Image 1: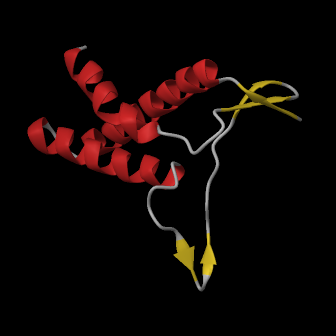
Image 2: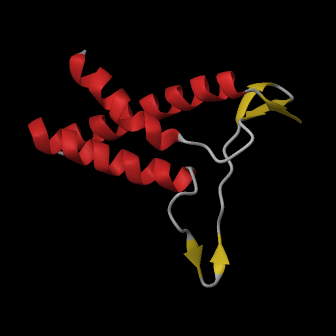
Amino acid sequence: MQLKLDTARFEEQQALLVRELVQSIRVKLQEAGLSGVKLDELTASIAFSVVSAIDDTSAIEFDGTEVHPYLTFRTADEELVHCGENSYTHEFVYEVLEQLLKS
């Protein structure tokens, strides 16, 4: 696998990932009977919590072992795209949620 630095492509991929996560969380909460403001608030809260773990902005540790995720995206059979630093998927959560609420 080749590791390729491509911030524009990485950002595009992050936004698509967050959109899919937010949509999936929202659907599952709707299936559980939530609606309205409570649905919106819980969707945002859960999504933000999940992507913060992916972004390595929340401490992950168990029995003295620390975990530090580093997000990449496979864009071709032998190519992984990264941005040269930790991901920042948390920056897309509220924007994606707003877009979903408008549609």
